[in-house]
Image (tube, rainbow, N blue to C red):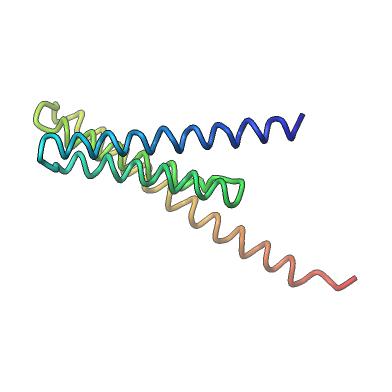
Length: 131
């Protein structure tokens, strides 16, 4: 059963990658068609690149670093702020900016936690006697 779930997982990862590549192609075609590249287009391409990076990291290590989805969320919120900034109420802009700050703090905490967890693991491995 475990192997079956792993196979389904790999198929889903491939489908996500293909869908992301199709979305990248569609976005590039949109920019070519309109003969313009806006900041929101570039941020969307960054989100796609981050999704592909997250998929590659998961495929190589069978785990997703927690900071990658946080970074994707920060980029998505930044894009949303840029797209809606003229129509937004000031308090909504403050809330969205605050959420980016909270995600940044969470990413920092997770990075520090991962560093100390790896250091502890290395120390445990080094301090174990040879058998």
